[in-house]
Image 1: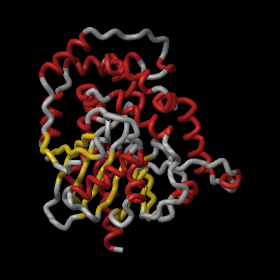
Image 2 (image 1 turned 90 degrees about the horizontal axis):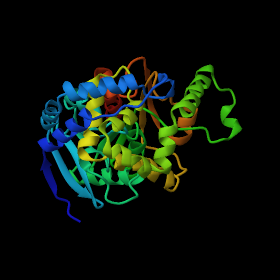
Image 3 (image 1 turned 135 degrees about the vertical axis):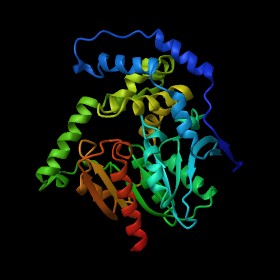
Image 4 (image 1 turned 180 degrees about the horizontal axis):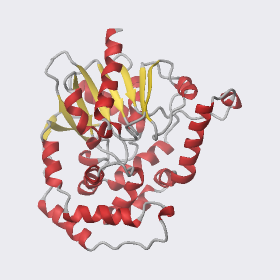
Length: 361
């Protein structure tokens, strides 16, 4: 298999943008009794109207193209990535992994501060964005982590850190498990460790831990439908997402908080639409649901958490069961699920402090 790395630029054909404009012009909106049933019609209408008459894809395309981008084939799949090198040749490389419904756009605001101290590799997940639709099944967390380890080796990096948000918070620890001699540390915004069902795990839970459990329970009871559908029948939903930009907007907007700016939301949604990856991206949930369980042994690579209030609330007693080397645990009042975008300074400082501590230690 070729290990060739090809320079890449984002160049969406004007015909694709014209087609998008036509579909937005002809959009049909559903009825609504109240917004208690999910993403509101008023929000989708407002975002769709801005997408039609104000949003500038070409400006965001230029912003992406301000950074070096490349593609390479790994394990039969095209992989797209940004590669921004620090001025210092001996800087530690980091591989930053996004999630769904995010994209590489999650990390644009931290490229400048982080590239002062680190070489940055920011890939599009297989089946997401410019990595293109997946060409076969099996692209879940573990296979992606294996591909990322291969990517870093292909780039000549034999010692690096793994950073992630959302799905990236699942992929990054697995890179450490797959390549423990190469990964110096793992920095994530969520540690997805859940109760095993053993009653002993709930003994002496603090009020804070009980509150976090309540947040988790409410999320799955009130917001977990997307995960169930993606895990069971992603193709059934994919037909609608591939045909309607407003449908895609409504579906993906459920996990874009209201405090996010419209340009950030629309750029992420537009990236899925313009690359035809709405359907292939959600297949990752199916692949993970059908995959063999992750190894029962805890990870040993140093891991650091930078969580934000209002996002998934990691519970340390469960995290310590799954990760034996928790080197940093921070919770911030700001940031939300997309901390690298909402609070880039706080996020970049936490990443820098984590890896600096490891290197100095």
